[in-house]
Image 1 (cartoon, one colour):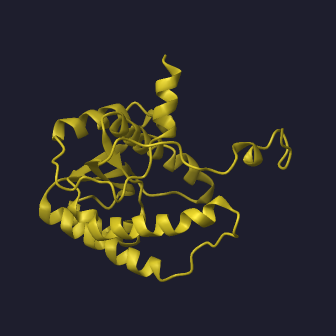
Image 2: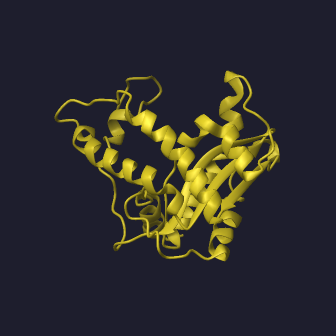
Length: 213
């Protein structure tokens, strides 16, 4: 296995918002290929209860994008996490807010919107990790496969505030839970680089919380 290529994929799969190419169509076959790969992800008890809804109909994309935009408007008016100067996240926040606002305004214009779903409804608190663990890895695999093929995605879940409205729009049964909504488009520019993250060593605890190497 070419670790250099694999590591590059894993460390450069960014949330693509402002660099989505809204004018270039994405072949259905390419999206289907990414979903095929996603279905090799782990699944609890081998249930394979996942389902991906690919939305390319202009009217449905617009309606789903409007649901997302409505929620974002309310979200943007609530206090957000603040970081002290010197914290790298402090300098990143304005850029993140700007790109998030752009995505909210243009979500419905993406060539395709993909909703990752799972059969059933979330169980009690103690079992939710196992439940969502059967769909979130598949959604991430889809995004990695898309990145490898020159497609941009962005992990979002904000529309879930109005999940039933989205379900009615897309004909999703009541016993199916939506988990992730991502736009899918070719991206503009040459590519992506590693993000400026917090040091992994400071957030890695060995045997006991607070014990670092």
